[in-house]
Amino acid sequence: MPPSIVAQMLRTGLYTAVIGRQVRFYQSTGSTMDDAAEWARAGIEEGAVVVAETQTASRGRLGRRWISDEGNLYFSVLFRPEPEALPLLSPLAGVAVVRSIRQVAGLYPSIKWPNDVMIDGRKVAGILAESALSGPQVQHAIVGIGVNVALDVSSDPEIAATATSLNHAAKADIDRAELLRRILQHMDALYLDIRRGRSPIPEWRRWLDTLGQRVTVTHHGSSDTGLAEDIDDHGNLLLRTDAGELLTLTAGDITLRAAQGAPAANA
Ligand code: BTN
View 1 (cartoon, rainbow, N blue to C red):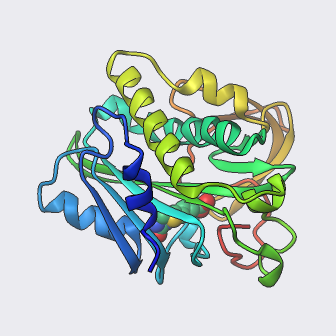
View 2 (tube, rainbow, N blue to C red):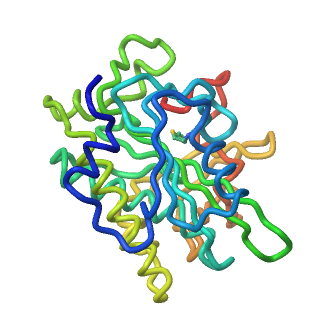
């Protein structure tokens, strides 16, 4: 059996202060989100990373599944942040993914709010943030990232028209281990920045292609159409509705398009 993606990554070193102090690899697991949460509840320190080659019960935002075949990137990172840093973790991950894809694949992704990483209008990576709170304190937060590296999106009608993969977009075989290493290193640097009071939001805002567009958002069973005017310091979307009202929308429960069944989250 070839060395796992984690063994490949560690062979050339992972240069981080916090993230990746402990790394677990599963050839197959249910969801790295659940593995990381279990590890968190067992008291592991922040920075722990769970990587899987395949997942059998992976999940995306809004309860969708995330297609998790071999050859792609699936991992979750555990944080124990101050409460103020919690809303910054998902933007942190978006920035880390965009920077890393630029460096490793030579592609220029953008972000569709809240955190779909897109290439040429198609989704290439998704980010899921989950947290456990105890009153105002954060017990732990887990950021899960899935990147379509080798996925043949045409083989799955659910995502064929809306998703892409790095290999397809770059017309080359992208080095997954190098991509994983870069993402973790960028996440580490951005997390240290947050601890020093520097937010990832300004850079995240630069990669967002949603701002200035007319969008329809669906939330709590109702829809609003308007102009995506800006984001605030917590990454919330400020939507100027056609009726002139300014809505502040948090990422958790929102989709930026009219719901059409329940497609896989890779789409
Ligand atoms: C989304 O775009 O809806 C988020 C997708 C997040 C998928 C990743 S893959 C690794 C981690 N494990 C999961 O079950 N989900 C996340």
